[in-house]
Length: 333
Image (cartoon, rainbow, N blue to C red):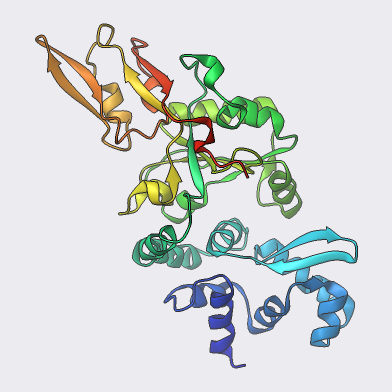
């Protein structure tokens, strides 16, 4: 297999066959020898050494570098530590961008891929998956009918239940970086935190530190995004509207992120019409309209994603979050 075929094959392995960018991104971060090792996975170091004709110690060193680059992942199995390559474009993007050896040129090429190719890829994937793979999680504020909030949509409970916590830089803002919003805000939970700490791509944080990151993110106007499943989300991303894939691309956000189960509702008698909520909304869901000679905020239910950014900074406490979708709206798997 020649050099060009190697990188095309890697692209095919992560379901991006025909990409104009992914083969070159692999080429920039993995030499030909590393590419061959990746294509030989999954396997233990012993199995891969035998398969490719390397001394065991040399193979272990090469796999360790690939692991720290974010190109292979490892798992403890009865037969030993099993190595596999990144399984999709999301893992390839997020893991390699956080490697401390990445170059500005590598990040710039990811930026081009994101703008020029990713929208079409997302549109294609959205036609074959049953639900978006991420979802909005409401801000950590009191919600009307508090008993309607479930553990998987309560960021404080998610943080508490994680066991191990770590924080990494937002990979979207590392690539784009045009918004100036906080960078070290994406939380890793449980096994994802173990991976982050072991690889050195982020740092361990306490529960209190994690909640402070949540509060800072809300104040900065970032939206909490988790995996779209009722239990076991391993991330709480804090996304901006400029750089982050979910909200910054010329596609419908709902193709890759579901709304929360909640809707922002304005108390017309309390609203002062200050317009803070209009500025905070990513989705143009809030407008000011004149009612009885005074301006008040009006929320378009069909546009609201239920993030609560409008609620958390409302000076009059005129906005509440109300459950409008059934509990099974979030998949239980």
